[in-house]
Amino acid sequence: MIWPSRREAEPGDPGQESPRILVHAFDGFLTAGSAPSLAAAQMASGHGTVVHRFDIDDYFDYRARRPLISYRADHYQDYDEPRLEIIMERDSTGTPFLLLAGPEPDYRWERFIDEVEAVVRAHGVELTIGLGAVPMGVPHTRPAVITTHATRPELIDRTNMWTPDLRVPSSMQAVMEYRFGERGLDAVGYVVHVPHYVAQVEFPPAAVALVNAVIDRTGLQLDTDRLRASQDATIADINAQIEEQDSGEVLSGLEQQYDAFARGAAQSLLAEDADIPSGDELADQFERYLARQRKDGDD
Image (cartoon, rainbow, N blue to C red; front, side, top):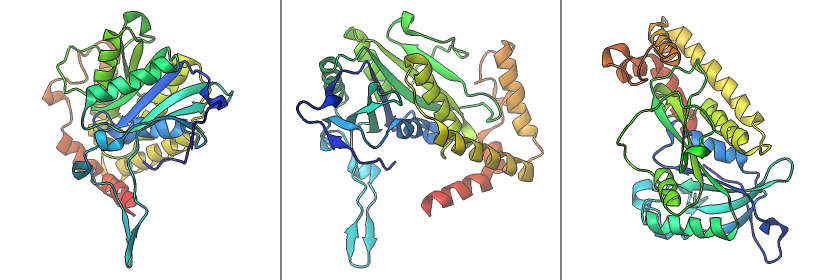
């Protein structure tokens, strides 16, 4: 994700007024459909003020991620330098909030959390909001489902459609929320469910759902027009591919499963294998769609 330029905070800068909210969205583990990164990019104005810059060398695995750089005839240029920064942004009414976005730290998680905590306390942040996305057996033709979690039950602001008890691999979002809860800081997380057949490409509808969750929670006035335009184009493209390649049986099965779950007639979106279209079935039907998306991204 290429981020707009920012300016550094200076002593006496009006951007130093204390925000109530910090939103964080990392590019790493919980990033199905690139939804958190798309949501963060939508919230970034390009005119925000850097209030804290992390030393990326402490946290980034260059050999695992290999940032891109361009080679032009006889020299290198346009290095995609990885950055982790906390930016003071403002909504359309001028209300300030903090935005932390970039690569999920590969190393020194506890030190990173300590750094974020110091900024939260220094700016009097009242609530930290984490954004994530996971691939699930859901159809793109139904409203996006969001699972909400928090450091205190009183912070849960919506009813979870899916309430599993699972042991899962940890993420920075999860560990930060956990540590903040231990330290008496309020934190919530919103994880959107992304159709697993589009989890490897950008899926703007999931990003719209995450931004709307932040809006509903905080009252911030955040524009989603650009994401909604991308959402409409993406859905139209997926539908065109389905009409061209598929009789609709697999998608229909996902829709029936989702509807049964929403009615309480099914126990989980991770039902028995016989009831869920396999990844191979879905991959076969969306192969050309995904191939074209990846090609467009390479171009």
